[in-house]
Length: 387
Image (tube, rainbow, N blue to C red; front, side):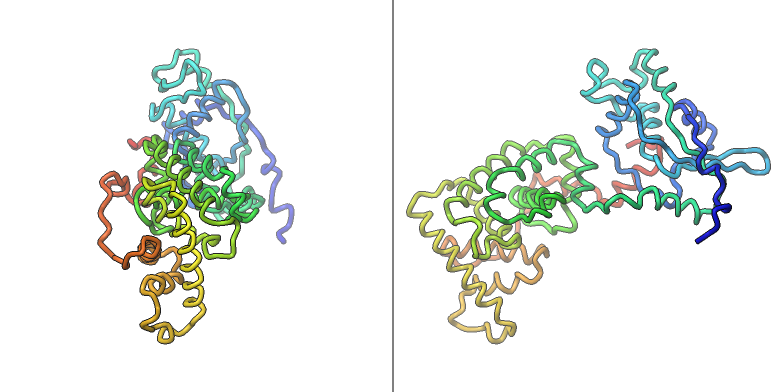
């Protein structure tokens, strides 16, 4: 452990800087917003607008950490160690990059240049609490930054989405995840619910039933971004979930010992029923037939999965649909495997041979024109760059 005297009391120096101060530092090219240890900017417009609303109301904002360096010519530079997104939001608002939101009452929808002078001055005069760090090596600054965040539990992907997106799509997904079916089904553990894995799974179901099976790891974030401002299919999505979940409650007892209580298999079942939503609810005869086939299919797949050697599976007596499904179980989130399982189950429930027709491109699929995650992130790199 390093000696205490190596860490001077200046670590405890606290001051105040106004928004105007940060604005002037930016104009003078004295503000470093992107040190190598900082996170990429991820705030959405609604989060930025809410911060500006808090400033206008005089609400407190968490303190900032800044390192001030002075060279031999007396020129200062200020490195934002912690608080980059708050400062960035203020500076972007001053350059009219986004308007205030609905929470700002009569000011909602206005950009900075449209505000009355008294509100513009109030923003410039707002004081941040700033903890000033002395000139230190990058290693020590990185250590400080790490310790500022060390007590934060590492967020999973869905918790990050919850903090990043506030729009119609995520609110719809969170609403659906609170439906009583999920509590009855036993599909989600208490930890799943606590860590929002249930919301992530519901999101996968929604995207799958609207646009076809997806690669879990690649596409979900793109859809969240595409539908942040508007989710026109919300009524349709809510209706599909109501119909499918309602039918599932009639088709089986939940929780059950069949494969359908497993997330991997429930995904396939949900997409199959979602594809026949116009036929729901089933009549009594059809429901009894489908319910029996779900039991038979689950048991047949279990028998095949338990056989490790593919050569022992091959038999004229083995149903091609259950064989295809069983072989695709291993790579549970792989796009090809998901498509195979959906096709196999759909064929079995309908009493038809399995068919692997090329998936048609969905004309309303937002991913057809959406840039990659890397491109989306690069566009936020400069404060004054047009979005």
